[in-house]
Amino acid sequence: MAIKSSKDFEKRRLERELNNEIEDSKFKVLCPYCKRTKNNGLSCIGMCVADNDY
Image 1 (cartoon, rainbow, N blue to C red):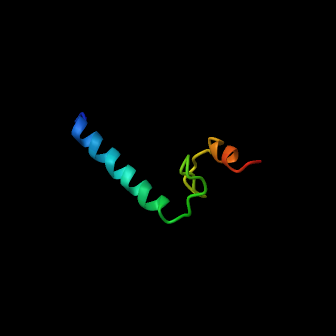
Image 2: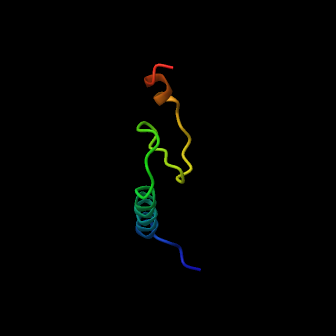
Image 3: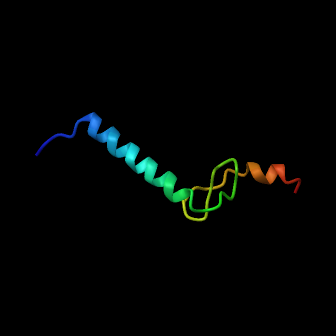
């Protein structure tokens, strides 16, 4: 069993991050504050409600 180096870990993390950004760019951003899209699983932080004069 080989121990993964921190370089390998960082490389995989950056690849996942890039893949997520590419996937997210396919969908319209619903909230400019939290960068929520239909499919990225982020929760809205509620700041956009305050800006809409509800």
